[in-house]
Length: 459
Image (cartoon, rainbow, N blue to C red; front, side, top):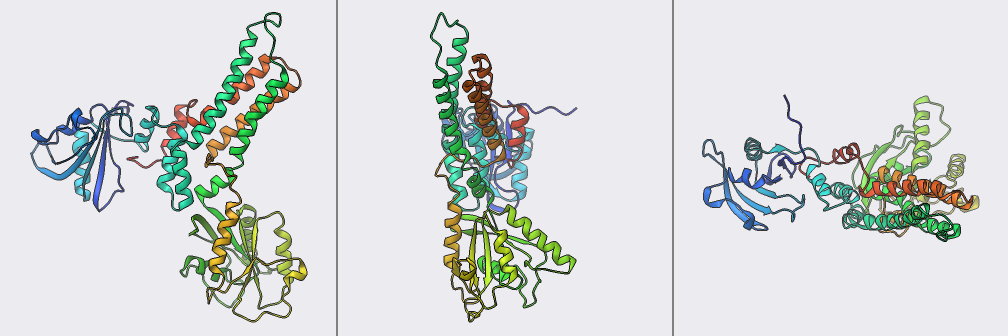
């Protein structure tokens, strides 16, 4: 019969990526970490509480045969002064797959169990070292590919979101205590807090929530990358621009209009932002069904885009397809680009006459304007930044904020309508609990398992 994992088990896992490498790190965490590891060490090189924070060069051997497995460097962190707040040992060994496997095998034979995904960080949360928003920031930091994602992951790990939501929650707690205390007394015994004062306090918290909520779009861009389709009529240079920005040939480029019939997505670092460039099908009045499907897909990309790169071919007349695209870009964030600036400007190319103002001109063969385009892309993406260090980057946090905001608005409406405090109190308490979900003060095992289950094993 399988034994159910327990939170007080001593766990072990490979914390570096599996496979061949120069070095690997195996982690042990739990109350039996020291005793388990000492079974694998020479008698004169065993660790104790005095080994905290020290690196020890020693060997690991199979206790049943005495065979030496590897020469390693051990670092011991005594509870609660460790990542998990438990006794924790990091074993830095050579990165051969056999060595890694043997250390894990011997550790489990000595009493440890293989850690679940994210279990080390989960224990750091359960031990009070970090809150839930900081734990999620750890996962974001591991997956960060560009500077902006790294920067905000560090800020959240350092507690930017935790501090802001905890401050707002403390204001709700104060208000809840004030309202509920008055419920225990009659109007003859105390002077009730005026409804205007309660409404003002609710509005102050709502304003604070709105500041964080306003940055959710920017948070998604930072975490997941900005969706940036390249659009225009056929043969305007979309695939060439994609290849130029990537500095490699990823899209087929021909003189035949309509070559691109399905979108091609590639990611690139643009001035610290992860930009998900999408080469789309050219927009025109197409008669062929397959090309029509590609054009429909292009319009779907336009609707979901964070920023659009719209190309106009200056070497050809400005046509009906260009004007149609222009009408579809209303209320969208886009950059208008004159392509093929190395070619003569066509006499019928006059976008200003149609109230279209190009932002810059580029040439893929010569590279003209490409550096300026990168700068312009990053500056447009920064417009989404509401200037808050505390940002929400995932749907769980956004949902919790939204539910808290909704409950506060219901409490505000009741306050304005002079509803009894017992009803206002219910909505205030709900708002407080929803904010607590962000930091993990209010949570369930199912939520925790879902969050930490997305982590890699060993973190």
